[in-house]
Structure formats: C-alpha cells, structure tokens
Amino acid sequence: MPPPRPYGTQRWLTRRLVLPGCDDMDMQSAASRLDRITVDPEINHGKPSIRGMRIPVQTLFELLASGMTLDEILDDYPVLEREDVLAALEFAAVSAGNQQAVLFGP
Image (tube, rainbow, N blue to C red; front, side):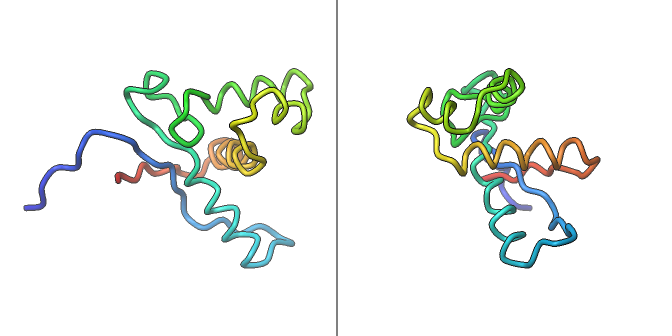
C-alpha cells in the first residue's frame, strides 16, 4: 500500500482540451498554464491561487470583470506574469465548460 500523500500544495490539472483552430502546440501551452494554479490549505484558505502566492484566482476574475485590462493588472501586481492571468482564464474556461478539474498532489 503506498504511503498517504502529504497534505500540502495541490495543482489543478485537466484532461487535454480539443478546440477548433488550435494546434497541438497551443494545447500544450494552455495545459501547462494550469500548473500555475495551486491550492494550499495554508494560503488563502485553500482557494485556488496563482503560483502559491496570496493572490486568489477569484481576484483576477474580479479585476477583469471590473474592466481592468491585462496591462493594468500587471502594472498593479508586478509579481504576476502574463501567463498567470492566462492560467486563471484557462482555469475559468475548464470550470465553466463542465470539464473536470482534477487535483494532482505533489
């Protein structure tokens, strides 16, 4: 019997998405962005966050919904990278599209 997984940072992964007009390279880069979304019970009460930082994915959604542009968000949060915001959007697309987001342990 394998030892239990340590209780710690989890990463959100999903099955491969197939979208019209996207080649394999697009899909690989989109899937790899989800590695930037982490869940750690000790950070943000276990809410999905960006790269283990104290920036919840929900905050990025709220900023985008308020009308902020990607450049404005990156100016306000210098620790974020463009790929972080794209990872949050990919996470939203997977979650909203009735696709299963699977927790993957370290």
